[in-house]
Every structure is written in C-alpha cells, then in structure tokens.
Length: 323
Image (cartoon, rainbow, N blue to C red; front, side, top):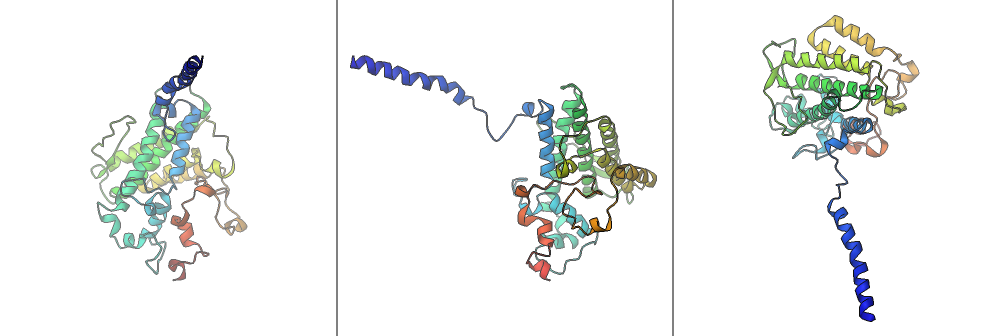
C-alpha cells in the first residue's frame, strides 16, 4: 500500500512538471517585441511613434557603442546649434557639455568624435522607425482609417525632419555650394535587415526627398484623427502644422522665400501669439499657445543632470552659472 501511494505521488508530481515544460521553453522576452507584433495594429504603431517622441530627449549611454549621456539627443543638439550661431556666450568651459570645443571648430570636425557620430546615428535611427511605419502602412497591411492616416503623416514628417537635420549638419549649405553635385547623405528607405548604407545622394536629392515626404505628410494629415491625448502629450505628437513648419524651414534653407512665407502662415494657423504675461511665465511647458510641436518631458524620465535646462537654470549652483 505504501509503495502504491509513493508511485501515485511520483506520478502526480511529474505531471505538472511535464505539462509546463513547453510553455517554459517558448517564453517570449519581456524586454523586446518582434517587428511583426510592433506593427500589427494601430495601437502598436502608435507605441512605435511614442518611442520616437521619447527618443528625442532620452538620456541613454547605450544609444551608440562607446557613447555617453552627454550627447544623447536633442537636449545636446539643439543648444549646440545655438552655440555655433553665436546666440549663446560661455565665459567658462565648465558645465557646457563640450560646446566650447564645438564653437572653437574642434569637436565636430573630427570623424571619430562622439559629436560627429551620435547625431548621425540618432537621425538614422529615426529614419529606420519611420520607414517601418511608412512601408507597412503604404503596403496596405492594415485597413486605412483616420487614425492610421495620422500615424502615416507623423512618420513622413519624422523622416523629413531627420533628413533635414542630416543634410544641414553633414553637407554644404544649399545656398553656398552646388546642390546638384555636392554630396549629401545616404537616402535609406529599407525597413528590413540586413541594414546596409547607400552612396551619398546629392544635396539636391536630399532636399527633393524632404519636400516629397512633407507633401505626403500634409496629404495624410488631412481628414486624419489625432491620438486622444490632451495637454503636453498632445503637443508631443506631430501635426499638419508641424509639417508646414518644417516645410518653411526647408524652403528657408533653399532661399525659396515665398514658399517659406506661405508655409509659415499655414504652420501658425490655430496657434495665437503669446501675451506679455505668457511670455513672462517661464517657458517651462509646451502647452503655451505658440508651441506647435514640443517634447512632453515626463517628470520621472527626464535627462536629469544632463539637461540643458538644469545647467542653465539660475537655481543651479555650478561654475557655468556662477561665472
């Protein structure tokens, strides 16, 4: 009798072990998702877009092999542009995230510097994810809806934004060179591996692609439905106004003044100018009426001590402020 009970007990203990083995071996990772799943629905595609939004101000030393948080994303690149144009003056080489070296024409002229490589990587990372969305939607994988048109419009706008940034940083200016022959940057449209580069297209070809993408974005945004979010989160989403704003910037770079003026008027539609009190409010939110597009910086996911606003704040007791 005892032997029989032992046998039954062994069998009962073995059944659960055997029954759970298959599930255990087929578990999906909790920190990754396949591209097929990521693009399987409108909701998932919106999450891909949200990842691009978040990447604009992320602080991640894993953004590039050998990279660091100082040059993660736009919290470095946007103020760097202000430094290069002479809009900011630094009296000390303290907490300025190496912008002084850039202003002295050293840092960004070195092929192997992080300043040169990380901006390239980040913008092409945006292009890759935009291509994923564009190719999937244009391929007819999902039934067209107003929400899907909005996602498509944002993807086209992001690709145009990335290429405009790349051609302005890695090629001769449109008005100071020969755009028909000057080398620009590679045009990449693939969303499937292996991911290989292409030869550098001309500056003219890059600007043509930017304008084509913005035209496609504006068309897609028409009769589209924006995500059902409000406040700061809504301003983080790209819109037809943002597409017109980028078109105006593109036209300015080319010296196409009339297109720039017309696009700027369209971009400002529905965004009234700030009052005097609003100008003095501190510029600490993207919900201000003049803001067409601005990152929604989540309080628990900021860039912390690498934020430009942290270093430039009058409440920061650092040498860059004291001097």
